[in-house]
Length: 501
Image 1 (cartoon, one colour):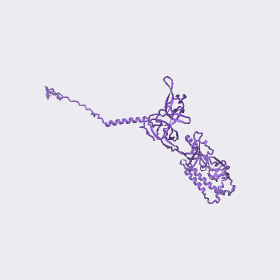
Image 2: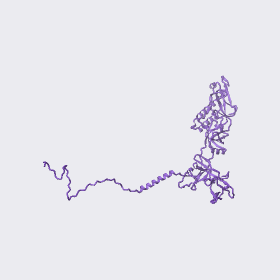
Image 3: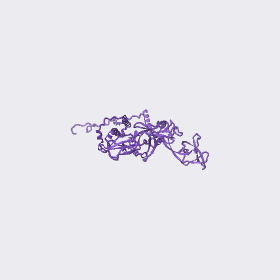
Image 4: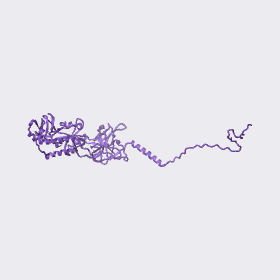
């Protein structure tokens, strides 16, 4: 045996001790592998969260239903009137004659604008050489003062401009400026007229031509091309004032032979034409005469009305006056207010108005009164055995036309071609004729019931209808605010209806 350390029994060569099975000794159990899992809390129902969830679901359902259904809003009928806009811009038409210069030269006016001149009165002179003003300046004319009348004319002209000034029509400021300048020149020329006589008609080589009025009338010093315009010639283009041109005639200016030098209005009768809608124009024409307030100076006058339908298809109202022409002789366009009595009645929204079709039944085929106090008709029917008979059918009357003596009956009750009997007679009327009525849906009884109306006046939002009609509305009735939201005879939930008044 080789020398060296002896290894112990039971010890393996790698140095690890081998476990030996000893009789009567228990073996140690093997270690168990532990698996870790996430802890889950048990479901704990909270009654508050449950109630909140139910309420939230209910609200969502209600919102969806709200947006998917039409909403019927009710309106309580009240008495009232309309605040209608009665201010119009009209075009003034007069009998105007344009007078042209007979000779060329420098014109000097002696008749004030807006002044009435008699036939053969001096209106202006023409200096053919242009040296008249120089010679007049050399004369000792002295100081000139304005008379009370001349001061009043200046004051009235300024006041009229202030009252009628519109910032939108700023060009009128220049017209006012030239008008004042022209007035000053005419006053100065009037004072110099005696000096012209001292110089003589041909003094110093001057050739002076005197021009006299051919007729009696009001003198004005402007033209615009509308002097021959008649009421029937008026169209909507007239109110395009951007293209309107008013030519003013200035004193001491050079004119050629044939140029317009002044204008003469020979008739005190004149008129204003305003654009209106056909319905309102017809009502105004029925008035005959209307009181008119001129916004320029707050002057009031009565105008005779006449409705026009001109070539452009539009409707116009002509207001004819027999006075005050001279006060507005220098104006082509005037702002006027029509002073009319407002129609009063039942005030309803325009959105409530609807049209409905009906059958027209002669008066003798409608039986007044019935089992329930309503009206009835006798309609022909066919029995099961094929024989003809009649039935008494209660109907609701929606309107009675006093001129044609016809009743308007609901088209849902009758059919075209139905035969009606006359009471105590074998005469038969065949249902066929139809017509429409304008009305609203009354909901006093809980359903949409059509009621006929007669419109007295109307604007974009409201209409005034005749009150206390037999088949119409009364004050404090409830109607549907929006007629398009309901159908005829539709049931209305009064609890959800809202007051639109």
